[in-house]
Image (cartoon, rainbow, N blue to C red; front, side, top):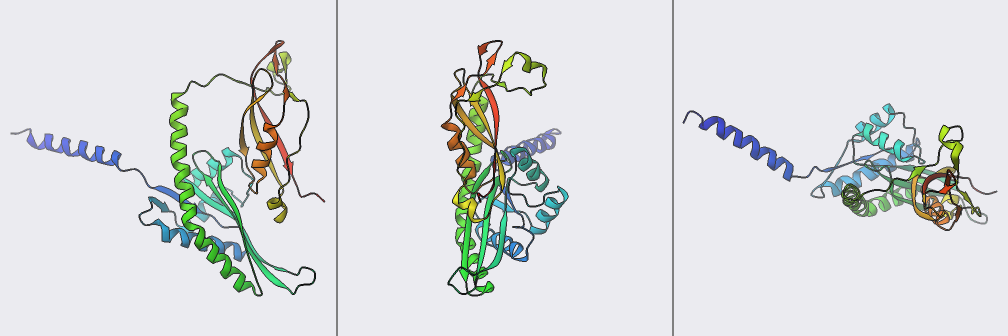
Length: 294
């Protein structure tokens, strides 16, 4: 009888531990400012409020706007929409979240030829994963009205209408990431050589892969609409014959530029890489710089 209380206490601790494991941790989501303008901050506030309505019973938790802003500022984030996977993961670590929203928003006057002055309120919305650093979703919303207030009101209504779809997007992304992680653990990954730097000792006996024909990715209409200037990096796996086996975007830019790069690279054929005169599979990093054509 003297041992009953300790045994009960131990059983209670074990039961608590098992219960804690059975309850999945809620996904945490942060919303950063959509630029430095007042309209950008108001759009981000509207986004946060719309997600807050969806939060109850949806299995995620929003971080406070103030905490997210302070953490982003402390990490040195200045609102870039052109991040590498590593930069995105580092920012997520500072925010302490699983996903974060960032973007660019403003309200500006427009006067097309033959039309009176009106106002456009727009928001480019970017959803980023902390686990992978990938850009999960991007879209450009826009509303036009005779007054700035009316334009912003219409844009706010669009953000509220899209909130449920944003929740579905990061919920699906989290499920896919868990599945990818499980498959990666179970699968034996073949050793593929990285293309060495030109001044590295390994480069002496190595011939880099070169494309037979260079193709230029399209500068998309969505990018042109916002005058986007960005760099997109693609990590490309090539087999022993120089054929493209996989393409991973490791610096994203949104506005369809990532998809444009991936689509273009998959159409390319390369002269095989050689190590000591023998063809070898390699990973090569390709960078494409975009700016609006004149």
